[in-house]
Length: 625
View 1 (cartoon, rainbow, N blue to C red):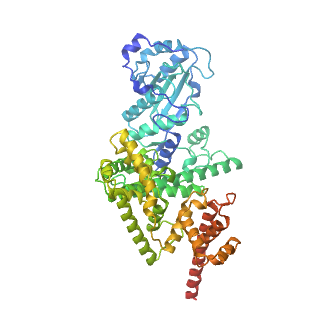
View 2 (tube, rainbow, N blue to C red):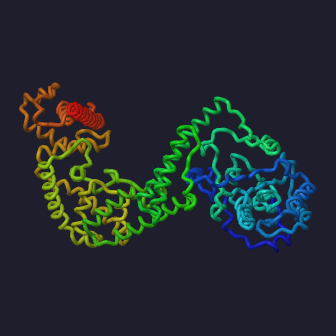
């Protein structure tokens, strides 16, 4: 049941702001705080960045519920009393305004008119929001007012609940009382503050910390375990007795069972991993240059996070860099670096696409994709970075050609276990130069089409001779077309050119050693479940063996004797793969998948590396002797 506000309430209220009608989701996400992961990340960053602040305290007064109008009036009278009160306010119609203590009886009558049933904890809640000693009363009031509206008046946690609040200054630290009517005034939902609800005490504490941070007050909201504190705090009754008894040391914490201690130590390891991950993030932000003048700060934050992880792995409280918070909120600094990095990336990409068509533009696009992959961890939800971080699969890439991709990877030294000597590198450079000339001749026939499409012969050669292309690159080439019809025409042109490439490369003079290097690269980069016959350079070697070996030598290879191949194929893994192909040609039932042979190539490479390292150690040891 919903209650219609009185005319008095409506006159004293304000016009409804649609922005506060949002509703919290059921996945633990908070509209203001973000996902649970975002919330925890902020808490851990602030822990490592100097937990010299005060931990938020939000509590429910157990005896503060009201079940009758008389109980509610007594509670409102206590909260809104004049003595020791800084100020009182309310949101009786869902909108914040000052509260007149003389209206407690009228308020109790209005609220109780909506009550039905006999809930176990009553129809009203009494919540206290505490502040550390020394906080300015005006600052505390601003934070408390904003907090009350965020929690109960925003509509973000299932409904809007009316409350009367007051900031009390009658103790050694300021605290705000909130008496909340549990019956929602928009949806009629009953207020439930519990662990599994959208609104719980963790959320309320985190909102207190977020709002306080925005007003320059360093209040934190993190668990004891996230700070490396395993023991429970002393019981409040024992603390009071200790203080009243004038004891110099606080009472000992309640003991833990062995099982509970083990569980908490295991949880510390989980937090240690999260501190490590955030340290990597801060280090990435520092290296990216994001956040003008922040590189030193972010580097120190990365070190503090690493130190926190190391402390928790040893089962001891973290040891943060207490100086970091003096320079700003660590979570806000990371967010600022993230925003600046995204803005810089967007500006850089727009500048690249504004260039005239050229091989240089393609090279810069390729470099941008590599930077996007490195930066994506800092901004995983950014669409521009995500699109450029993803490499096009060969089957979705009309520019893909296995030979051209392998030549590019070999030129860049990206092929595992393949190193080129000076002579082979010179051969590779000559082949790539000849490939460029052949592709230029092929594309020149379509020069007018390319110009209309916003590209050039030189740029198309560069696109096809890359080792790989990102989804963002390809999308930008299509989006550059002026209309849908031109986009379709351009995609057909791409496919046609891709199909013509093999013809343009026929008769390319490749040395045997370079063909082996190509075959090794293609073997290692092919899909594990593709067939050996789909590795072009390997099939070239198989064809050469048919032309080179005598029939009796081919028979020896097919029977399992690889000796005739020793001089023909130098790489052991390739030699075994070629022999397997020669033996099983035409046998569709044979195990001809690429995967096992790629694994063999990698295993032989690792064994060779280990052998080389052992020989180096032996030589070093011999020298020392």
